[in-house]
Image 1: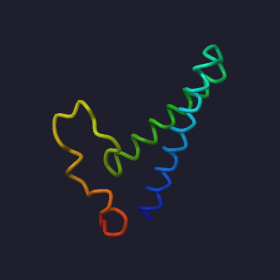
Image 2: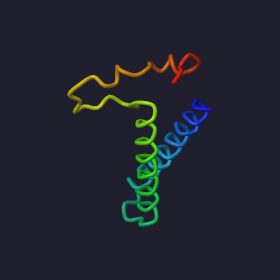
Image 3: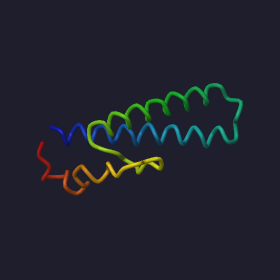
Image 4: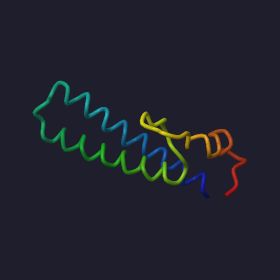
Length: 87
């Protein structure tokens, strides 16, 4: 069950991030579009929220540039989560 939730959350992050990025590209040529800016802000916030939830449950998705320790090495590696990870 955990992997299903993990995959669903990752797909949400990808969808929200794609939508925000696509809106950002649109805003490059339509910078005064309030509708596009609202859409961008909504999907950016959704992507950030889903990313925070994912990282709280499963570990970081990216390496933080302001890291003082190597926390990302303390959890299971991505290939260990597929079928061998036990909580």
